[in-house]
Length: 96
Image (cartoon, rainbow, N blue to C red; front, side):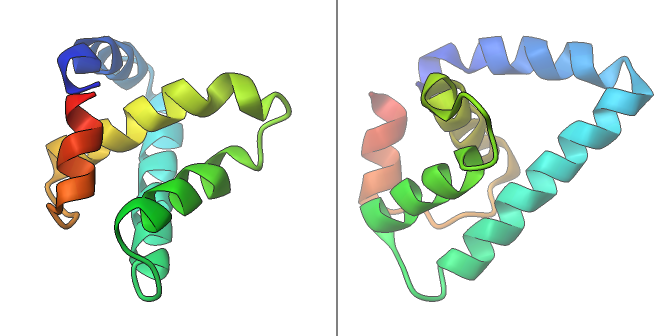
């Protein structure tokens, strides 16, 4: 996934050109970070990652179609924000 993060970067660049959508992206990013912080109190590794993804997509009407984009966004935030633990699972997941 990390090799395809340019797709996410292009999307974010487009979003940031529109102040309305930029705020929405920042709110989504804050939600992901907050969810990670909460979940990391009781979970780690694969279980934490899977729960984070499922928690994010549960609000979407067509959630199954959003799994891959959601994973790419989470990996992007892991990589760019450098606020998450760097453990083996995340490293292996990013390489895939």
